[in-house]
Image 1: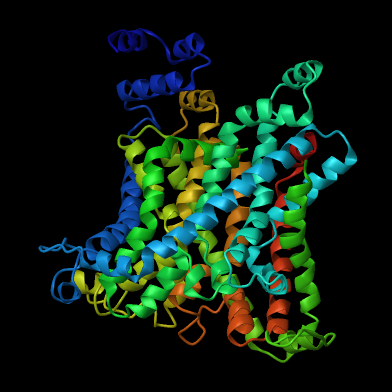
Image 2 (image 1 turned 90 degrees about the vertical axis):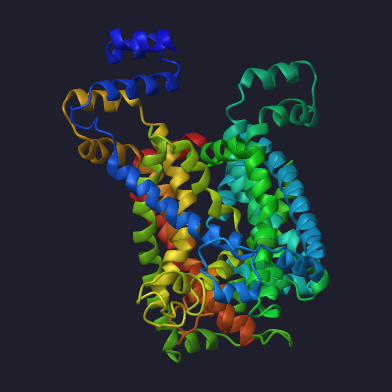
Length: 313
Length: 282
């Protein structure tokens, strides 16, 4: 740290860049330290407006979340008598218990089944399609990619009526299949796009040397493409899991009975069922977001890096 | 290798896309089977039902309003997150949180927060707060634009953050040496360099809010006085509450047409170098 500071003091801004052209972080740190020392030059003052805006937006983001959490520990009487924005003086777990006693775990399991199976199939079929498209030199491969890309622009909402008809005709209405199958389909375009971009970056030589060694398509897919495309698969998996876990329209239109109810729909039902029991409704909100929060905290770096790389291309 | 993906995509996405056009020419009330009625639905929805045009107007207000709110906030937030401010890393973690909540969860939260009886209005001593935010037909559109923005600004902020990080730092160094201030650098370097991110993000925002449904349905159901019954909601209510799936399909086809036109327009605006990179990719 000492040597770092010493070197920046003697060096011009360009020297740092010349020394370490391949490390962007280093370069940025140089800039920052120069900024601190050379205050007064235009554009190098601390970004006060930006900072204020940043904190203001943080307040906008956090307030509702803070409100759900503190309210979910209240009693209904407490909700009416005390200041809503201060934590309650007698926190209670009763709202959570009411929610769990109302089949929450059943709905949770349904969501888990739908999300995991959708994501597993999406990953499997998308990586296969992406490999085919990325390696294909034929017109057919290119056409296929164009059609799949078109799919990104197809709004789910606009096709829900035929999907409803189809699911009815297939006899799948009000089953978990009705949620899994269409969601796989609508997840494919974006997933294929992200994975194709990634598979294309795998050096040609690797494919060729595997071919020379006599590896078949399947072997190349499992031994080369899968390990190399792992970051893209993580991005796709997490993003689609978020979409499916939180999806509302398909469950709303394609299911009916509480046997196959998933979490977002159960929240909707709870809000009707609990009526004015606001703490229980918000406790259900907290419980339904908790798994994603845990995943986010454990895998935050992967999620953010994956999302930015996946959509930045 | 591509066969399973093609099958899924074809059966549950591509065929329904054509299917919705076909159903728009049919009369179907869910229970019976669909019957061909030609242009009757189209005639009815476009000409005999003034509300269609009201809903289109509301949709345009919602799309434009959402864009004008989300785009600048997301852009500034992305630039801010890509910078070097103190606590930036912590802020970026927290900004992400709305993405983890389902639209129903967000809806229920704001319903409670905006309630005239408890929530914010009971907690803060401002006279204007105990407004019935969601039942006031003059306000509800703006409330919805805000809540939907609350959900989607973080994602677009993330896109912009990634975009800003790819701008070569040397451009800013050179501009600083030339005496360009922060504002000048923002408009002369950051914005032009971000043009593809801006196009991507704008497409997602515009088409996204054009077809957005979940939160508005949960929070208002289109009430009061149909003040936020935008086309996607109009489609749902017409189809699955009034059981007129033929009419609903007409509305769906209109939505697809507007959405595809919008994406194509934005693609054309994005210019030739984008097309080149598409060709290089294909």
